[in-house]
Length: 128
Image 1: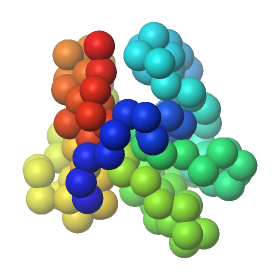
Image 2: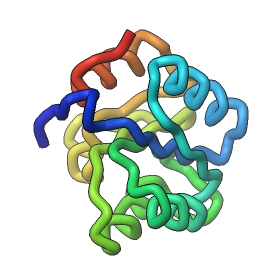
Image 3: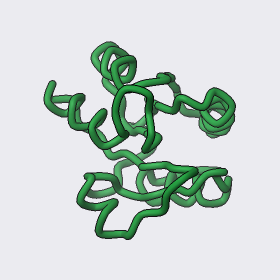
Image 4: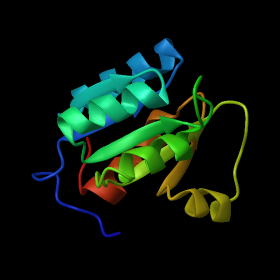
């Protein structure tokens, strides 16, 4: 999947059951000029995705009701597609595992702002 222009990509879905991590990432994304929506579990992420049709997503690996990859598969089953990042504080993943899950990147928690910005630049074309 190729990077898209920032002018097109504006809506970012952040799905993480850790409220502090979710709010920190949402605050960073908003400071970068993105419209954000939040979810704390897979079912909520599906409902939000149906409503806003996100252009990009950040999904925690361990959610209360599913893992991040399963959450994205459920969303994609409804023909809602977007590049997404897999995040985890408990596990690390090989690049092949991340790709097999369908994610464009993996971020280890706690999130490094520099890495989040690198991904935004790589996939969205720009980030402060």
